[in-house]
Amino acid sequence: MTCLDRRLPDDGIDGVDYRRLDLTDAGAVFDVVTAVDPDAVVHWAAVPVAGTHAGVDLYRNNTLAAYNVVTAAGRVDAPVVQASSDGAYGFFFAEETPLPDAVPITESHPRRPEDPYGLSKVVTEEIAKTVARREGIRVASIRPSWIQLPEEYPCRDPDYVEDLAAGAGNYWSYIDVRDVVDLVEAALAGVRNGAFDGHEAFNCVATDNALGRPLRELFEKQYGDTPAEFAVEGDSSAYSTAKASRLLGWEPAWSWQHRSE
Image (cartoon, rainbow, N blue to C red; front, side, top):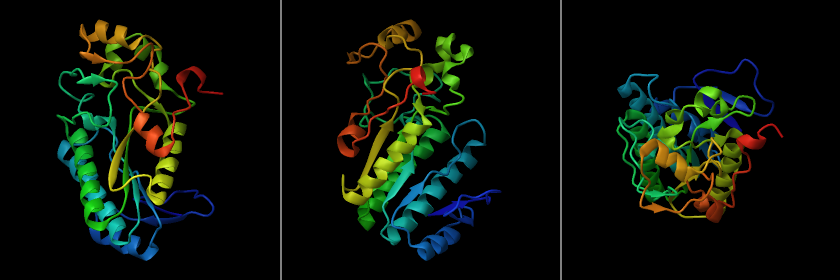
């Protein structure tokens, strides 16, 4: 295994080779990828959220890095699993959070971002589609919601739980990092073994919402309305993960209700 990053770790992991480079540097990326000649690539490097960088810098970093990595992988016939985001749908960073067209939200829901981060993820997925068509590789784009570490779980902090508006941007969705890892592993198996052709995107969200309350009630209290098509019961998530289950055999296993088990 070879890990590429801008900085080398102070304490590396046995069996992992580390290379220092900037993924926005096309020459460096092509040089290393062709030298390593990997059997698969996981691309998880990006500015991970809006508001921390100038919009143009965030967009440039995320899209150039994706273009360079996925294109280089295609040249050496290596399938790819890459990080996209539920931000691609355009809900979270919109000036006013819109109602989704339908609930649960599937991967076919239109992507309508208003912000540089969401736009960068849409473009990242389009890059994957282009390279998959041209080079004949498989690419899986993972769309995680708000990722939680087991020892932290900020989606259960009182300030979040007691303020309905705090989680309204992604409809109170979240995902445990252990489930993200499991989906990346399932997607790696899928792109290697032919679970699908070309490019596919996959929602990566816990089965329940972070507040543990009926989702319809949350929509009605926060927005005063629900989508006309609303096929979710109880405290379920607003997002569907049925596609990942069907194509990759993945099901989210962790919940805020038993995060430390």
